[in-house]
Image 1 (spheres, rainbow, N blue to C red):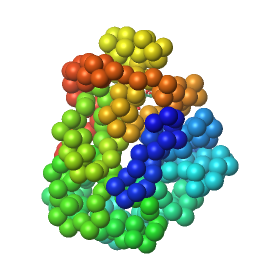
Image 2: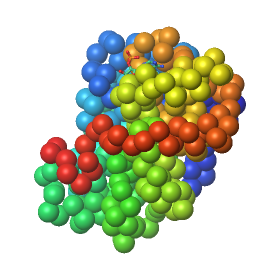
Image 3: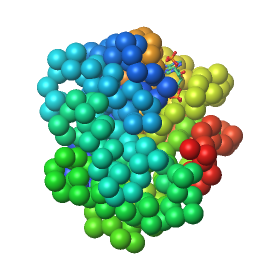
Image 4: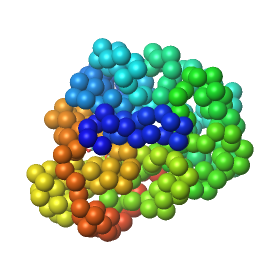
Amino acid sequence: MKNIRDCFVLNNGVKIPCVGYGTWRTPDGIDTVKAVREALDCGYRHIDTAQLYGNEESVGKGIRESGLNRSELFVTTKLKNTDQGYDSTLRAFEGSMKRLGLDYLDLYLIHWPVPAVFKDEWKQVSRDTWRAFERLYEEGLVRSIGLSNFLPHHIDNIEVSAHIKPSVDQLEIHPFFTQKETAAYCRRKGIQVQAWSPLGHGTILDNPVIKEIGLRYHKTAAQTALRWELQQDILPIPKSLNLERMAQNADIFDFNLTPEECLQITGLGETGRTGPDPDNIDF
Ligand code: A2P
Protein backbone atom coordinates (compact mmCIF):
# COMPACT_ATOMS: atom_id res chain seq x y z
CA MET A 1 0.00 0.00 0.00
CA LYS A 2 1.38 3.40 -0.98
CA ASN A 3 -1.36 5.71 0.23
CA ILE A 4 -4.72 5.83 1.95
CA ARG A 5 -6.58 5.32 -1.34
CA ASP A 6 -4.86 2.02 -2.08
CA CYS A 7 -7.11 -0.94 -1.62
CA PHE A 8 -7.44 -4.43 -0.26
CA VAL A 9 -9.45 -6.70 -2.54
CA LEU A 10 -12.40 -8.48 -0.92
CA ASN A 11 -13.29 -12.12 -1.67
CA ASN A 12 -15.89 -10.98 -4.22
CA GLY A 13 -13.39 -8.79 -6.10
CA VAL A 14 -14.59 -5.48 -4.64
CA LYS A 15 -11.80 -3.04 -3.77
CA ILE A 16 -11.83 -1.44 -0.33
CA PRO A 17 -9.57 1.52 0.60
CA CYS A 18 -7.04 0.28 3.16
CA VAL A 19 -7.82 2.74 5.98
CA GLY A 20 -11.33 3.74 6.96
CA TYR A 21 -12.52 6.88 8.74
CA GLY A 22 -14.54 5.87 11.82
CA THR A 23 -17.52 7.82 13.12
CA TRP A 24 -18.44 6.05 16.35
CA ARG A 25 -19.34 8.50 19.14
CA THR A 26 -19.61 11.41 16.73
CA PRO A 27 -23.22 12.49 17.23
CA ASP A 28 -25.54 13.59 14.44
CA GLY A 29 -24.97 17.26 13.74
CA ILE A 30 -22.64 19.85 12.35
CA ASP A 31 -19.49 18.39 13.97
CA THR A 32 -19.92 15.08 12.15
CA VAL A 33 -20.79 16.75 8.84
CA LYS A 34 -17.62 18.83 9.14
CA ALA A 35 -15.47 15.89 10.25
CA VAL A 36 -16.56 13.68 7.35
CA ARG A 37 -15.97 16.50 4.88
CA GLU A 38 -12.53 17.16 6.36
CA ALA A 39 -11.65 13.45 6.34
CA LEU A 40 -12.54 13.27 2.65
CA ASP A 41 -10.58 16.49 2.02
CA CYS A 42 -7.49 14.99 3.60
CA GLY A 43 -7.65 11.88 1.44
CA TYR A 44 -9.83 9.28 3.18
CA ARG A 45 -12.11 7.52 0.72
CA HIS A 46 -13.61 4.95 3.06
CA ILE A 47 -16.19 6.11 5.63
CA ASP A 48 -17.54 3.80 8.31
CA THR A 49 -20.80 4.45 10.16
CA ALA A 50 -23.65 2.45 11.71
CA GLN A 51 -27.37 2.74 12.29
CA LEU A 52 -26.59 2.49 16.02
CA TYR A 53 -24.30 5.54 15.95
CA GLY A 54 -27.31 7.70 15.07
CA ASN A 55 -25.26 9.85 12.69
CA GLU A 56 -26.03 8.46 9.23
CA GLU A 57 -27.74 11.69 8.16
CA SER A 58 -24.71 13.82 9.02
CA VAL A 59 -22.34 11.31 7.42
CA GLY A 60 -24.42 11.49 4.23
CA LYS A 61 -24.39 15.28 4.35
CA GLY A 62 -20.60 15.36 4.81
CA ILE A 63 -20.22 13.06 1.82
CA ARG A 64 -22.41 15.27 -0.36
CA GLU A 65 -20.64 18.45 0.78
CA SER A 66 -17.28 16.95 -0.22
CA GLY A 67 -18.34 17.18 -3.85
CA LEU A 68 -16.60 13.88 -4.61
CA ASN A 69 -18.09 11.43 -7.07
CA ARG A 70 -19.97 8.60 -5.43
CA SER A 71 -17.87 6.10 -7.37
CA GLU A 72 -14.70 7.36 -5.67
CA LEU A 73 -16.06 6.57 -2.22
CA PHE A 74 -16.48 3.45 -0.13
CA VAL A 75 -19.28 3.72 2.44
CA THR A 76 -20.09 1.18 5.16
CA THR A 77 -23.01 1.06 7.54
CA LYS A 78 -24.16 -1.59 10.00
CA LEU A 79 -27.49 -3.12 10.90
CA LYS A 80 -28.74 -2.33 14.42
CA ASN A 81 -29.23 -5.28 16.79
CA THR A 82 -32.96 -4.80 17.34
CA ASP A 83 -33.58 -4.87 13.57
CA GLN A 84 -32.08 -8.31 12.96
CA GLY A 85 -34.41 -10.77 11.18
CA TYR A 86 -35.37 -11.02 7.51
CA ASP A 87 -38.12 -8.41 6.98
CA SER A 88 -36.82 -6.02 9.63
CA THR A 89 -33.36 -6.05 8.03
CA LEU A 90 -34.80 -5.07 4.66
CA ARG A 91 -36.74 -2.23 6.31
CA ALA A 92 -33.72 -1.09 8.35
CA PHE A 93 -31.56 -1.03 5.23
CA GLU A 94 -34.06 1.23 3.49
CA GLY A 95 -34.00 3.58 6.48
CA SER A 96 -30.19 3.73 6.51
CA MET A 97 -30.07 4.47 2.80
CA LYS A 98 -32.62 7.28 3.18
CA ARG A 99 -30.68 8.82 6.04
CA LEU A 100 -27.38 8.51 4.17
CA GLY A 101 -28.98 9.80 0.98
CA LEU A 102 -27.34 7.05 -1.08
CA ASP A 103 -28.77 4.72 -3.69
CA TYR A 104 -26.29 1.92 -3.11
CA LEU A 105 -23.96 0.94 -0.29
CA ASP A 106 -20.43 -0.45 -0.55
CA LEU A 107 -20.51 -2.62 2.57
CA TYR A 108 -23.31 -3.64 4.94
CA LEU A 109 -22.38 -5.34 8.21
CA ILE A 110 -24.36 -7.19 10.88
CA HIS A 111 -23.23 -5.07 13.81
CA TRP A 112 -23.24 -7.67 16.63
CA PRO A 113 -23.78 -11.45 16.56
CA VAL A 114 -25.88 -11.98 19.70
CA PRO A 115 -28.27 -9.07 20.29
CA ALA A 116 -29.72 -8.97 23.81
CA VAL A 117 -33.30 -9.16 22.46
CA PHE A 118 -32.52 -12.33 20.51
CA LYS A 119 -30.18 -13.94 23.03
CA ASP A 120 -31.95 -17.34 23.07
CA GLU A 121 -32.58 -17.51 19.34
CA TRP A 122 -29.54 -15.72 17.95
CA LYS A 123 -28.53 -18.61 15.70
CA GLN A 124 -31.73 -18.59 13.66
CA VAL A 125 -32.07 -14.80 13.73
CA SER A 126 -28.50 -14.38 12.45
CA ARG A 127 -29.19 -16.74 9.56
CA ASP A 128 -32.43 -14.92 8.68
CA THR A 129 -30.58 -11.61 8.75
CA TRP A 130 -27.87 -13.01 6.49
CA ARG A 131 -30.54 -14.20 4.02
CA ALA A 132 -31.81 -10.60 3.81
CA PHE A 133 -28.21 -9.41 3.31
CA GLU A 134 -27.84 -11.88 0.44
CA ARG A 135 -30.99 -10.51 -1.14
CA LEU A 136 -29.72 -6.92 -0.91
CA TYR A 137 -26.45 -8.07 -2.45
CA GLU A 138 -28.17 -9.96 -5.26
CA GLU A 139 -30.38 -6.97 -6.00
CA GLY A 140 -27.25 -4.84 -6.42
CA LEU A 141 -28.12 -2.50 -3.57
CA VAL A 142 -24.97 -3.45 -1.65
CA ARG A 143 -21.59 -4.21 -3.24
CA SER A 144 -20.39 -6.41 -0.39
CA ILE A 145 -21.78 -7.90 2.82
CA GLY A 146 -20.09 -8.84 6.04
CA LEU A 147 -20.01 -9.11 9.79
CA SER A 148 -18.85 -7.18 12.78
CA ASN A 149 -17.79 -8.52 16.17
CA PHE A 150 -18.36 -12.11 14.98
CA LEU A 151 -16.16 -14.75 16.60
CA PRO A 152 -15.50 -18.08 14.82
CA HIS A 153 -18.56 -19.83 16.29
CA HIS A 154 -20.81 -16.98 15.11
CA ILE A 155 -19.30 -17.16 11.62
CA ASP A 156 -19.76 -20.94 11.52
CA ASN A 157 -23.42 -20.47 12.36
CA ILE A 158 -23.96 -18.10 9.42
CA GLU A 159 -22.15 -20.46 7.08
CA VAL A 160 -24.57 -23.32 7.82
CA SER A 161 -27.12 -21.76 5.49
CA ALA A 162 -25.18 -19.03 3.64
CA HIS A 163 -24.99 -18.97 -0.15
CA ILE A 164 -22.69 -15.97 -0.17
CA LYS A 165 -19.59 -15.80 2.01
CA PRO A 166 -19.08 -12.83 4.30
CA SER A 167 -16.43 -10.50 2.87
CA VAL A 168 -15.46 -8.72 6.08
CA ASP A 169 -15.34 -9.11 9.85
CA GLN A 170 -14.86 -5.86 11.76
CA LEU A 171 -13.40 -6.56 15.20
CA GLU A 172 -11.99 -4.65 18.12
CA ILE A 173 -8.25 -5.00 17.47
CA HIS A 174 -5.29 -3.05 18.83
CA PRO A 175 -1.85 -3.88 20.26
CA PHE A 176 -3.38 -4.77 23.64
CA PHE A 177 -6.15 -6.92 22.17
CA THR A 178 -4.86 -8.70 19.10
CA GLN A 179 -7.68 -11.27 18.58
CA LYS A 180 -5.08 -13.59 17.05
CA GLU A 181 -7.33 -16.64 16.76
CA THR A 182 -10.30 -14.87 15.23
CA ALA A 183 -8.09 -12.92 12.83
CA ALA A 184 -6.31 -16.11 11.72
CA TYR A 185 -9.64 -17.86 11.32
CA CYS A 186 -10.94 -15.05 9.09
CA ARG A 187 -7.74 -15.09 7.05
CA ARG A 188 -8.11 -18.82 6.41
CA LYS A 189 -11.67 -18.22 5.23
CA GLY A 190 -10.75 -15.29 2.97
CA ILE A 191 -12.62 -12.80 5.17
CA GLN A 192 -11.00 -9.34 5.36
CA VAL A 193 -10.39 -8.26 8.96
CA GLN A 194 -11.01 -4.67 9.94
CA ALA A 195 -10.00 -3.10 13.27
CA TRP A 196 -12.32 -0.81 15.22
CA SER A 197 -10.74 1.17 18.06
CA PRO A 198 -7.34 0.51 16.46
CA LEU A 199 -5.78 2.82 19.07
CA GLY A 200 -7.39 0.90 21.93
CA HIS A 201 -9.49 3.97 22.79
CA GLY A 202 -6.29 5.91 23.16
CA THR A 203 -4.76 3.43 25.64
CA ILE A 204 -1.82 2.69 23.35
CA LEU A 205 -0.78 6.32 22.98
CA ASP A 206 1.42 6.45 26.07
CA ASN A 207 2.99 3.03 25.72
CA PRO A 208 6.80 3.56 25.91
CA VAL A 209 7.65 0.66 23.56
CA ILE A 210 5.25 1.78 20.83
CA LYS A 211 6.40 5.38 21.27
CA GLU A 212 10.05 4.42 21.05
CA ILE A 213 9.55 2.30 17.92
CA GLY A 214 7.61 5.17 16.32
CA LEU A 215 10.37 7.69 17.13
CA ARG A 216 12.79 5.68 14.98
CA TYR A 217 10.65 6.69 12.00
CA HIS A 218 9.58 10.14 13.30
CA LYS A 219 6.08 8.78 13.81
CA THR A 220 3.66 8.97 16.74
CA ALA A 221 2.42 5.98 18.74
CA ALA A 222 -0.93 6.24 16.92
CA GLN A 223 0.75 6.05 13.51
CA THR A 224 2.91 3.15 14.69
CA ALA A 225 -0.11 1.14 15.89
CA LEU A 226 -2.01 1.78 12.65
CA ARG A 227 1.01 0.71 10.63
CA TRP A 228 1.33 -2.46 12.78
CA GLU A 229 -2.28 -3.29 11.87
CA LEU A 230 -1.82 -2.60 8.14
CA GLN A 231 1.31 -4.75 7.99
CA GLN A 232 -0.79 -7.69 9.20
CA ASP A 233 -3.28 -6.99 6.39
CA ILE A 234 -5.75 -5.68 8.95
CA LEU A 235 -7.71 -2.63 7.79
CA PRO A 236 -7.76 -0.03 10.58
CA ILE A 237 -10.68 2.34 11.12
CA PRO A 238 -9.30 5.18 13.25
CA LYS A 239 -11.56 8.01 14.35
CA SER A 240 -10.69 11.54 15.23
CA LEU A 241 -12.63 14.77 15.13
CA ASN A 242 -9.40 16.72 15.06
CA LEU A 243 -8.11 17.63 11.61
CA GLU A 244 -4.44 17.35 12.57
CA ARG A 245 -4.88 13.87 14.10
CA MET A 246 -7.10 12.78 11.21
CA ALA A 247 -4.31 13.73 8.79
CA GLN A 248 -1.70 12.10 11.04
CA ASN A 249 -3.64 8.82 10.95
CA ALA A 250 -3.60 8.93 7.15
CA ASP A 251 0.15 9.54 7.02
CA ILE A 252 1.37 6.00 7.62
CA PHE A 253 2.68 4.99 4.21
CA ASP A 254 6.26 6.24 4.25
CA PHE A 255 7.72 3.77 6.74
CA ASN A 256 7.87 0.04 7.32
CA LEU A 257 8.10 -1.66 10.69
CA THR A 258 10.57 -4.53 10.74
CA PRO A 259 9.23 -8.03 11.50
CA GLU A 260 10.99 -7.77 14.89
CA GLU A 261 9.26 -4.49 15.69
CA CYS A 262 5.90 -5.97 14.72
CA LEU A 263 6.54 -8.95 16.99
CA GLN A 264 7.57 -6.65 19.81
CA ILE A 265 4.26 -4.77 19.55
CA THR A 266 2.26 -7.99 19.26
CA GLY A 267 4.04 -9.29 22.37
CA LEU A 268 3.34 -6.27 24.57
CA GLY A 269 0.73 -8.19 26.50
CA GLU A 270 -3.02 -8.41 26.26
CA THR A 271 -5.04 -6.19 28.54
CA GLY A 272 -8.23 -7.34 26.85
CA ARG A 273 -11.10 -5.72 25.08
CA THR A 274 -12.24 -2.16 25.82
CA GLY A 275 -15.69 -2.78 24.30
CA PRO A 276 -18.42 -5.37 24.95
CA ASP A 277 -18.01 -9.14 24.75
CA PRO A 278 -19.90 -10.25 21.61
CA ASP A 279 -21.54 -13.17 23.45
CA ASN A 280 -22.73 -11.04 26.35
CA ILE A 281 -23.98 -7.68 25.29
CA ASP A 282 -26.90 -5.89 26.90
CA PHE A 283 -28.20 -4.02 23.84
P1 A2P B 1 -9.78 12.98 18.99
O1 A2P B 1 -11.08 12.90 18.26
O2 A2P B 1 -9.76 14.10 19.98
O3 A2P B 1 -8.58 12.98 18.07
P2 A2P B 1 -9.98 4.50 19.03
O4 A2P B 1 -10.27 4.73 17.58
O5 A2P B 1 -8.94 3.49 19.27
O6 A2P B 1 -11.25 4.21 19.83
O7 A2P B 1 -9.38 5.88 19.61
C1 A2P B 1 -10.10 7.04 19.41
C2 A2P B 1 -9.58 8.13 20.31
O8 A2P B 1 -8.23 8.42 20.02
C3 A2P B 1 -10.37 9.37 20.11
O9 A2P B 1 -10.68 9.84 21.40
C4 A2P B 1 -9.46 10.34 19.38
O10 A2P B 1 -9.65 11.64 19.92
C5 A2P B 1 -8.08 9.81 19.71
N1 A2P B 1 -7.16 9.88 18.57
C6 A2P B 1 -7.38 9.55 17.30
N2 A2P B 1 -6.28 9.69 16.55
C7 A2P B 1 -5.31 10.10 17.39
C8 A2P B 1 -3.93 10.43 17.22
N3 A2P B 1 -3.33 10.34 16.03
N4 A2P B 1 -3.24 10.85 18.32
C9 A2P B 1 -3.84 10.95 19.51
N5 A2P B 1 -5.13 10.65 19.74
C10 A2P B 1 -5.86 10.24 18.69
